[in-house]
Image 1 (cartoon, helix red, strand yellow):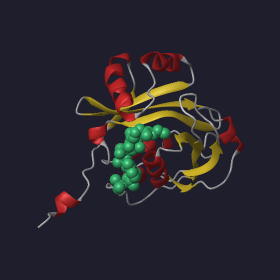
Image 2 (cartoon, helix red, strand yellow):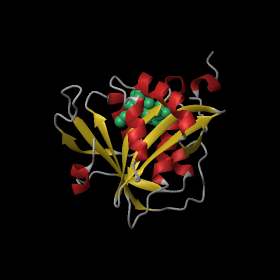
Image 3 (cartoon, helix red, strand yellow):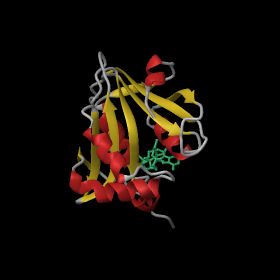
Length: 194
Ligand SMILES: CC(C)(COP(=O)(O)OP(=O)(O)OC[C@H]1O[C@@H](n2cnc3c(N)ncnc32)[C@H](O)[C@@H]1OP(=O)(O)O)[C@@H](O)C(=O)NCCC(=O)NCCS
């Protein structure tokens, strides 16, 4: 007989903090196992030197188990890189990382998250869709490495809702904000970088 605990997906609470130089080996390991065309170390360094670019890591018991790179624009946050260590996937870590980004939005100013997802990366499309993102445009021949299109997916903050009852099984709600799936086209999407 299958016990309930075996059927319940294991959730893993992580601590999200700024990426520091010492994290790079673990971050690169995750990058290399996650992507067919991973960023080399120099690209990370060059990216993080830019003023508006930020890197954060998700840590669990002193191990880096996920990371994200993003750019703070005036009206949106553009997610440039986003990955969870293979042996930590399906434990709600990616969702907590999205929640962290949502927490940086403001309904009056910077109110949108944008991410570019490869056409063939169905897992990431489903993940972002589950988080409330919606595809709003297609970039044709978006990459140098291989001829592939990309979807621009967007999550828009419409209003902040203070919830009386925080559902601890859902990190998305524990953040205290909700957003509706974004179905509208935005000019910002065409400005989003690869
Ligand atoms: C996409 C990714 C970040 C998801 O991280 P994660 O920590 O496993 O995500 P979560 O556990 O928070 O998943 C939340 C929901 O997303 C959906 N989801 C996540 N991974 C999925 C997959 N491989 N296939 C289908 N749906 C998936 C599920 O609905 C899941 O909910 P459930 O666990 O209740 O079923 C991770 O798979 C990854 O690092 N992939 C490789 C790198 C990558 O493609 N990054 C995106 C670049 S644009």
